[in-house]
Length: 430
Image 1: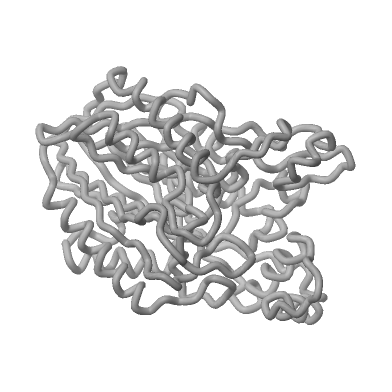
Image 2: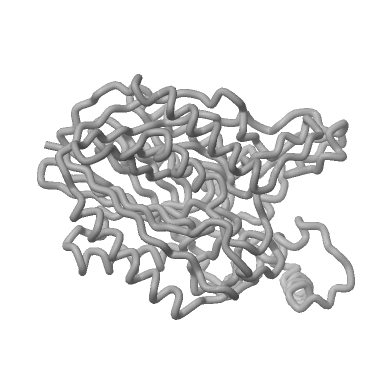
């Protein structure tokens, strides 16, 4: 028998908390939307699983493990059965102890988060009730997610090349994914909807915290289906965002974020009654840590890049440098100060025949298709920033092409095969 429960708690930060996501300082000066932790609790065949989503830019792996251990101590749910995802709005903090621009560790705030994550887990478990699951998938009626890397006429690859350069663009580097997946858990006291879509939540900007479009998805789905609670999971979005630079038309801001949420919720509305009932006799998670060598390119230039990085951080450069220079220096400083082998958490879960594939960072859109190929007869939900926030995961092809994400990524081209082979093995072991 399947049981499902849901809970949500507020985690809005105090004013002055650093907002992450850009290479400049921002601090919380107000609130557009309160930030939340949402938790879906599931039970089947005496196994329990918790899926927790957080309206944070990211949560580093060590902090996710602390949270999962805390939940295990409070609830008895094994830490390995706790899935924690950061939804990545660029109008929110990052939870980390890592020093860096806008990465200031907020001791008191993190202490509160540690308590809140236990609270939301306990509340969701207390809400468990007999349920059935129905599933459906479709495409948004309007394309709202675009690959942000483009082949340019000068032979380069540019990320977010600018709306004034639309005539210089040849084509995007990959095909976007505008698919929406729905898991509908029917219960006597109200349904729970799990919605999955992949795109960078970087539509609003500024210094007012917000959930960006994932928050609108939740609110619209709940409004469209009274009595329903919604949890949203973001897919592999490392090379996507809401801009269509080929069009030359700029779109963004709070209203466009609202529009994106409405488009996704409209797709859910169309899938709601079409969802196919599917039996859930088992649930479970399998986790593995991939250890991969970090990229040491540019090590011979460390001293000059470190001096550039320090001057950039101090605001004494005297000019506005190209972003690729900033990320190149940032990557090398981070690599030198860290271990030569970097840990990447991979989490594969199943809810009946539905597969959830979580990667602890920001995989490119290509990984959605690649992972789906491992289980073509099952519904796949891709989940970025799951149980960790360890960097961009480009493809081997993208590393050869260059661009912002590959300059910033701490990994080597071997990372694609290391991740995909691990996921393949874990899916086969489900």
